[in-house]
Length: 307
Image (cartoon, rainbow, N blue to C red; front, side, top):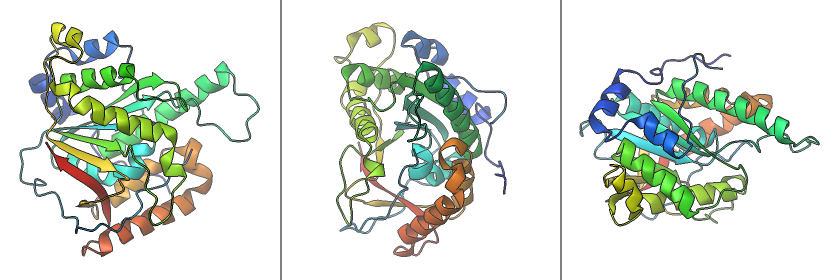
């Protein structure tokens, strides 16, 4: 069954307003400086473990800010295309419906997402995979109502939390100036069972780099002074949501956006197409299990910290 696109298009009115009000320098110009890509195609075109339930010591509660704060800007940082769809798509689709402007950063070039049986892993093959996965991610982003997708094009499978990557993320945080940041967990979770796919080294690296960029570097003028010289003033992110964290203290009701999460995942044909019936079944089961302890039909869970 084809996906039904009901989210807002990339770069819609809500996104244009946020750009005009929040960015200290030209957004695309700032990205070009460090070789980032932020393009919006004209038409939409390694499976990872989904957001599995945990057994937190403290009962997670719906974010008290949801539906009460004036909508702002959220930045999502992940390693690969489809990582956000597995971990937080229902949440960001909900926020987008509430008026939040949401930007997705994919740290790698996604060039390692081919078959495990491949014998041709040369440059042309990798470029073809990159093009396919970027197109799929843009299509998924449209469904969720995201404003933009930004690719940092670091080598897939080799991501490290380097100072170079941290600086790229600091540049984006100071440019986009988000209120909320969502990222992958930098830590392994061994309970109740170790989920191998979730703990891809790139996921851990992306989480480590994102949190280090958020604090202290993005808000500290003494970190990367050349960015300050460019006019990128420090910015303090107020909320951090970590996907797949060992400890959970936050549940977000995605009952009304679970269908969007599944539709967005369906766009990742190259990774999930052959097994999508099973993928959808697992996603629904995990969402239901995440929510049932809190009286919700479906939920995503996080560790949330205020700053």
